[in-house]
Length: 251
Image (tube, rainbow, N blue to C red):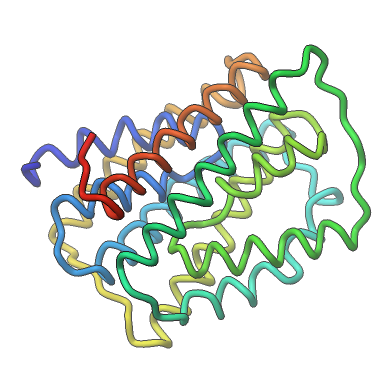
């Protein structure tokens, strides 16, 4: 894949992911692994691009009154420090991608099961459950190099917590906060690696894609369609990562 095509590809990735409250980090990792050699550069770049996309989404959700701080704060209590710690854990490239792919496949399946139900009911979670869930996913987000919303959102949908649009708003700010913590963790660990010549074009592309996708998310999309689209996207990326990095099979 030629580098000059990356901005166009990343624009559409950011558009699609931001429309369901995500940053696109998992797909950025998969795509960058085809064109970049340095594993730490791939991981660092995906985290930074995540931050730009979900910052836009978070702003749009706040502006439209979708984000509910009183419901969301417990998810961040442990997630931020554990994302910081997870980012400093060093593992082989193969193990990293197998872990990421497996987590995404399970997340996609759980979300599809949730949306197989005819009626989307909601169930409240205690603050202690929110804290533990946020902490566990924060650690996984730090280790995997993505913001964690792509893991949190399917779990919350499966647990029937809130409607998909509120969950998307949580996923957006969750990714933002944990991506920043993860990036700081990479810096402290000495594994932060960025190529700013490549980064500038990609940042512009994902900002534009994030603006379009966030608008669609807050205004136009059907709630159930959002969930099914997210589940299929997450499942496909997980399969692609496992095949590519575990068995050298390219889709």
